[in-house]
Every structure is written in C-alpha cells, then in structure tokens.
Image (cartoon, rainbow, N blue to C red):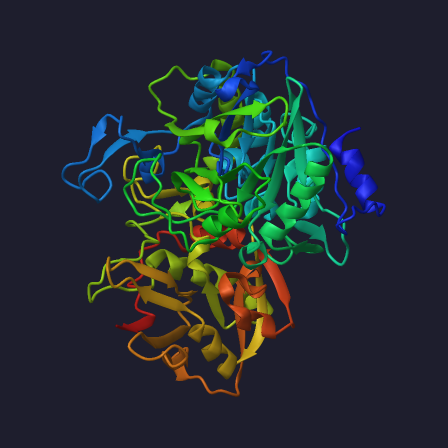
Length: 601
C-alpha cells in the first residue's frame, strides 16, 4: 500500500489514539551490509544519511554571491574584501545539480539514504519555474531522493498544485510541458504539522519509514509554523499549520508504538548564525526557532536535519532527557551536502547516539559533473530558452534593489527597483481604481543590471531577467482603505539597526510615485510616519484611498495585518506580467532618485 493510498484512508477519517490520523509511507528494504560490531560488542547496522535543503530549483550552477560559500579547504582567499565584502575568508565556488550528483555518488554506500529539508522548489530560476518546477523534481528523482519535508515555498502555487506535482498530471492551466505528461514524484513531501482545516486529517504524509538491513528508520517531516505569514493566503487555503514540536512528538510516539525506534526529524525551520564561519561550525542564535525545536523534541528523536534559514552549521544540543542530539543545516542552492553517519543497535532498533558523526561537505565544482544529470539540465535549459531570451525593453543604467545596510546618514530604505515595480503595479491596477501601489521588498529577488547576461552593456532586459526579479507569480489586487488605515499600515514597517554591527533589519514597503511620506526612526514605534501625501495633497484620516499590492501582502504577509482590514478586492494580472508590460511601454527606463520616502534616522 502506498503512502498516497494511506493518505486517502486518513481522509476517510482514520484516527490514531493521539487524536490525529497517522500514515506510514512505504518501507523499502536496502540490500545493506549484515551489520558490524559496534561499541561494547553490540551488533549494529551502519547508516549514512546525505541531505540537502533550500535548493529552490537551482539546477544550473548559481552565480555571484549565491555561488560562494566559506570553505576552510577552498581555493579562494579574500584578503581585500573584493570577494565578499568581508576580508579574511577562504571560499569555494559551489553548487549546480550535475556537480551535486557527482558528490552524492562519491559519498554513497549500500546503506545510504538521500534526504531533504524543504524548499526544493519555489522561488526558482526560470529553467525550473517555466514548467512549474517539474524539471527540478525530475532531477531530484534522478539523484535518488528518498523523502523530504515540505517547505513554505512548496505551497507557493497552492496545495492542489503540490498534490499534482506529487501524483502526476499536466498543469490545469498551462498544460503539459515539452517533456510530455508529468508522471509525479517517487518521493513524498512530508508535513506532520499540516492538517486539513477544521479536521484532524493530515494534508500530506507525516512521515516516511525505510528498512535498512532489518531495522526501520522513521523520518518525520515538519514545515515552519510561520508559513501562513510568508505564503499567500490562496497558497495555504484550506490548511492549518500547527506548532512543530507537538506535531513531531505525536508522530514520534506513534512510530515508537509501531516499533520504529530510530527517528530523524526533517524540519523546514532553522537558525541565523554568526557570519563567516566554517560550514561545520556551530555559531547559531539559540534563541531562534530552529534551536528551540531541536531542544524540545521528544528524546525518542535521534537527529534533526533543518532548513529555511539558508545557513550551514553542525550543532549538538541536549534533548529533554539530557542526551546529546545533533542538528544540522546545509546552506542553500545545492552548495553543501550534509553527510551524517550513525550506527543502529540491532537489538534495541535504536540509534547509538555516541556513534553519530556529521559533516557539511562543500559541493565544489572541481569534480567531473554527472553527465546524465547535466543532459537533463541542458534539455530543460533549451526548452526554456525561447521564453527566457525574449526582449522586453531597455534600461539606461543599473536599477538596484539593494538597500544600503550601513549606519551611514545616507542610508535609505527605498530602492530604484522597488519604485519601478510599484509604478508598474499602479499602472496596471488603475483599471481597478488604484491610486497607490505598495510592494514588499522581500518579493524583489535581484537587481536589473545594465551589463545584461548575453550582451555587452546594451541595457537589454529579457523575460528571463525580469523573472529573476519577480519569480513568485503573485496577483496584483486593489482594496479600499482610509487615510488612517494607510498610516497604520506604514507604521507596521520595521527599520531596526543592530547596535553592535550597524546592520539593519528592515521591512519597508516600496512605493509608487503617487505616494510620499516621512519615516522618522528617532520617534517611538507607532509615531514614525507623518506628512503622507497622495499626488502632493495631504492625506486625511477619513478619506478613502484605493491601494494596489500583491495578494501576499493583501493576505497579511510579512506582518502587515492592516491589509486584511478591507475586503472589497479587485484582482488584476500577475505581478510579473505588470512588470514586463511596463518595461515594454516605457523603455528606455532610467533609475529613479528613490526620493519618495523622506527618511530620518
């Protein structure tokens, strides 16, 4: 019986003693070895786990800063700050799934499983996103992925689309890709803390069990409980995201009753770290959610493999019974392969904690790329090239989305690219009566540069480059708010300097040319916004204003709850379509002076 058949049984109302239905994914025996003599003469089964996280559809080798990773054995030494902006590091250029495939093959033995901790798809480059990430899932199947937790980005196109990707079938709107009908994945996305809203039924399989030489290993999947705040409301419609530890512990207890004592959690939640550390270092912020989960999970759980924060670390923490427990993360974009070796006692069926060893291995490009996987990548690149290379318009200079994060007096939270995108959305949303457009900075993924790929400084902007800027396919919507609500919305913005490093944590909405205001960080939170003007006229508390924004923000994303206080929604085009249309209609485009927000600090 497959996990999908069992999931249908869950939907029919099967319930476990804990009050939540539980399903076991298929357990597939490995040929394996016959066991070794471990410490104290115990008969043991050696197991090797290889894991990745946050691939985000990066099939081709990532470039720029996304390709670099601190590596004590790396060939690149940064002595003057030119490589990364921080002197003194030693780096490797890493990533690319054909190189990852070679590293996996070199690390594999007969008792190896390949795992992941979410965000394998979503926010992907066009080579994958053009065909709804089927290319990435095809390659992951070739790599031999056994299972993965779901990540928040797996829900970008909604639960129904995620089920299609798992089960197969052509996209309901765009149809089949050039490769033909999608066959589905050989692995499931796991989520023990995602339920169908209003029920105790799992939306996705909660765990996966694999038998290796007679012993069972259970893998429990979790996605960050903050998913409703960082994914569009439509993407998570009909789903309930519960607290991670409680959900994992329920699944763990069920596995233990079934005799599965060796247990691993794959959790799409992680920690920030102190910058410029070795991938094997443990310099995490233990106040973060990843560390909390790793500390609080049931002692029955032997190991925690994490994701989400795009950091590399190998850590230990004490579980509630005082035993050491490893928790790890492997950077992002396929730059790190985490290798974990452990022994399972054949008598107790449990992991011998003292046997666990973990290492973050950099996916260097000094190896020969795997030819089968490289052929897959090149085939998908060719299929997407016609779309990617289409010319949209031109720019006269770089149009950047970079906010100066220094403590200098010239620091501004507004960017030229943010202004451009807000203007494009306002122009498209005027059909819905929009007077102002606001854009979340986290939805702007990269800058437009004058020296474009494939050209020599001619300022051409292609569809592929525009897609890299806005890859989420959000819908531009319009709602009516009062002037007082607009002020309350702007007051929800964040601009917080770190007193030690001077780095800035910011969440400042980018604004269309029709809106100006002053943001004064020297005043208390809630009193920072003043002098709001619409097309040069002061805004009153009682006037009605139609505001355009993407559906992520309209659903209260990034903590902007004021957006949810209006429901008279007009829905327009996809944000990327508004951006590409604006580029075509207004070229050549020059960067704005980014002077719509008067910033006082």
